[in-house]
Image 1 (spheres, rainbow, N blue to C red):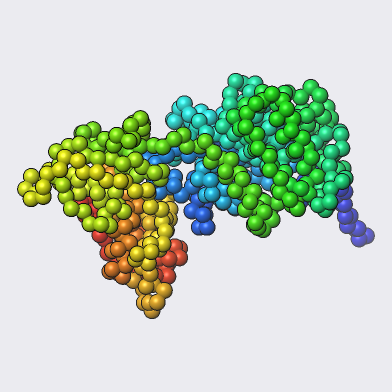
Image 2: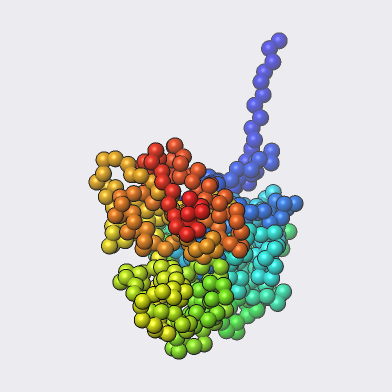
Length: 560
């Protein structure tokens, strides 16, 4: 007798659009999802990301994003504000590695010049609320510990570059809900951060506040979906007026105690959640909180469009508002520059009279990093001889500093004595197109885990040449402890004049990284340059890898 095959139908048990479906078998289908992508160096923005583990036992992790300024600069020219980012997705979809959020964080970090920690909190229904809140709080404490203990099991670049007096919590949708709840918990623990940014926050409640009279068009969401979402992700809730999802409900913690110095609330005109976001802002302003609150509405757009839709002018406008919010007050005044040349530094340079009151303790340190903010004028107070500098030398502060030091010990010099040589340090030169030589440069990360990077210089003539160019691997000077690859003026001229492809190596500096660190970095960089099948598009297209030269002077010659 033939057997009859049976087909088991896995019936749908629950559907909450556009988030999730659950079947009778327990199978979960996440609908509103995007592919995951690995941490990497983003070729579009130059932002470097890496995944870090916060709590292995809870499988709590985050993705750390560093802007180009934190990749190529050692030590930090300035401390960078820190964003703790909480992604959206109704507490049940997406992750820190979702492609949409990864792309958005790359753009935000580059635009705002901040460090970001994107928290990969656990999702419902496998981990119902309050798990996401607990994970988010633990991640926030992990970040704040860096302000007190740089050995707290962390990424050293994060500890070196992060300004932990300028922490911002930023989130969209459910992530903005987390931001609010973290703000309440901060206040309960006597803590405060610089700012909270709630982008299209997910707040809900029994009262209907929505799109009934809107002329902007229908929302992507339906009321019944949000009615079902909260009890699904938070089964222990007592209802839709739970203060965690409805901060305006009776008995909810007062917004007057929110643990932040500033708050940004952003909504979208077509979003079903728009009115709740606006009401939150108005309640905050009326609460007696008394600090800076900013509201911004995007006309004609729907929920979290800036993350999931193709970038447009509306998304760019919202990004500008968020970046402006993050940058405000992020730099307190101007910082001074004190070149560190050992014992010589203390009596060689001092600020001009007009610059009195600047904090001279903010030294550039032994790596000689020149920073990215406007520097005050300095003059020499040692008995050094006046020297003639070429007109273009003022574009390279390292060049000036080298000549001044040499002159101070050049007793055979015939130049006339002048006890005060004044010069105006220039702003750090990022990679750019040099108008004088036509050379375009860019920074690349060779090994993000060790901060090893380089600056590439192809000559302008590459666009017209029918052959590839010799490659020069260039090692900068400075006694292994000062200067860096970003002394761009000389290399622009060298590259243009000799028609070569220059790779300037930014090796680690002593004393933070004593020898042989510079040798190891230089060798790793050389091996990277010499790859036969090169992954770097400029080097692959323009560089003749059969003709590699090593160049350097002073400490550079030792490396070469």
